[in-house]
Length: 434
Image (tube, rainbow, N blue to C red):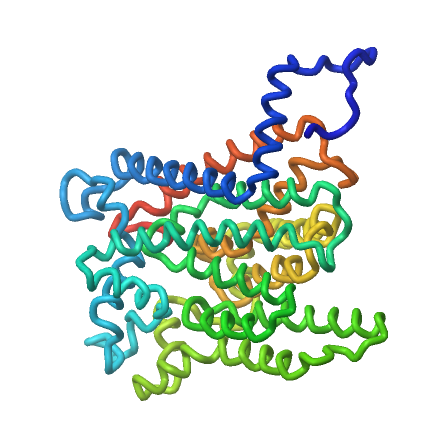
């Protein structure tokens, strides 16, 4: 299924590959489009093997003995670094009461309360049957990650509230495959919440676009015990309901007919999702601001003002040039989402692509964990697929799209190796948080 006219024999045109090679590639592309789930599971499995290879390389050549407690770090050591220990503690012992405090200053300090409970609670039954925490968490994330990839594909191919695009199926398939290679994708295998959060976010977006509001509300509530992204999801819900109201009026039917109560319940669920875990932490510990106090001990202080910390960081590091570069990067990204490379995506997905990163910049201080947090911004992969595969006008897929996609794949693989060898390795006296 090559795009564009056959230019063989045209003066000045490049000769096409031998028929056998081109036909072979066409057969692969046709099979992938006919069996998208099998294709994506294959890509996902290959990406997990690449992650294991990257972890083994990092253990052999980049991980210091001080970070693992013995002279020769092995692959098994790489699965329980950083926040994995905190999740293991939650799965084993739950949350500490009263809140841990600094013995000298008396202030609230680091504790498990900064981490959401659903992932370790899902791992706990697996450890109860005898699996070590690392093995149980990796097994769970393998399954969740595969489900997340399929949901990302389903979300990207959804056509309602999206510009017409004859190559939508191919673009969506490529987007989901590229997402498997996002540089921070090792966290979808490691004992972290990324795989679970991706399933819930992509699932909620899909159900919302299908107008299944009760199911969306349920996922939104569950998401509130997984990751603190409810405010961004609430913006998507509002945009969707406004579009639905407009469509219904244009069709001369009662706006939200028969689903008004469900829409109200969905809005309430997203609000509860944002407050559920902080409210539980306050009730359980007896400290009204427990969750936020613990987050502050980790350096998260959104009360200082939205975007202020990022602007201050850019100004302190590079002055006016730093601020200009940061604003330019944000503007370029917004232009991609709003422009021709984003218009083939549903409005709800584009809203998530805009609101979620801006929400992160507003409430998260400048840390290298942003690489990991942006894994949930899976529309980035859809933008990459569009830039690599389509013409500059966005009207059709170019004939040499495979070579362009290969360049993107190689860049992503390089980023994955860099992230694993640079950020995931742990040095007690000076590592950047992954």
